[in-house]
Image 1 (cartoon, rainbow, N blue to C red):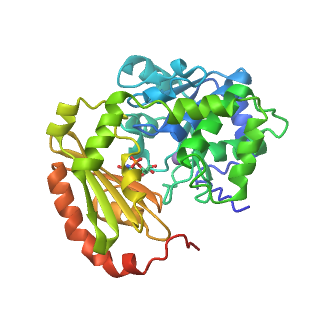
Image 2 (cartoon, rainbow, N blue to C red):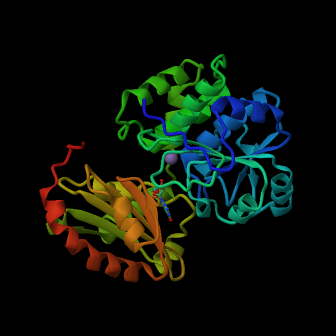
Length: 353
Ligand code: 5GP
Ligand code: MN
């Protein structure tokens, strides 16, 4: 199995050394990326449960907030939020002698906590599956082929502590991360993902409980948003095999959208027959638009997002931001997309290398 473990020039830590450092640490801080998703929170809280079971002092600090749909996770209320509790967060960061960065390899992805990580003398570890990680960490557990960071946490703990019997709490968090990042196993491409999920099921978690908490919690408002977005706001560019949806700031205000309400909308665009690219433009703040891109097969939306929208992500799921209205972002996208016409036309859906 190809696991890339990079070590920094400054310190050369093996996983055994790291294990000793973890056991000797006084304050461990685990930091998921900003606007955390199921995998960022699941992997962070899963690792937190393991460390707590080992009687270690550890805290998860999230930059902004935990999305509502993840409130069913065990002890999710123990997570500290930097924006609402900066003093406590700064105190934890000041005392930290070990920091885990979860589900991102570039420090700007953790928001305002970036500076606190950079200035800390703690041992810094990253567990992640995104392309192009920075290399200024003391220990990297990084593998692009993994379905999710939660799958990597499972592998990491197996290597770190082979005798560990995964608890139900850790199992529920890690299973949630795998389930959300793979869209309920739709984007799970390798046996290891299913084998990990099977092992986690053995912890006694209820698959039905987790699935219904994640996927069957739409509010009537969200269903109305989906109806409105699909009926009024979706455009199909047949010649570019692309479908997109945009929501302006005014529409967002009118609909009373809350954080997380637009989650998953982009997938409706991609699910249209013969489409290769799905895009979603969401003007979350006046003149500031969040872009979500999805693709099928070998069409790499992370390259498009990195080149034109200052973002990144995975080959088939990426995102970025644009300093402009939703309309201006769409205009930029419409300028860009024609250059991909031949590539999009020739792509055989369902075929990947
Ligand atoms: P989403 O569209 O769900 O917000 O993000 C999909 C994926 O794209 C995420 O898993 C993350 O890897 C990546 N992503 C989203 N927004 C950004 C961004 O602003 N910068 C970078 N580098 N990656 C992003
Ligand atoms: Mn992830």
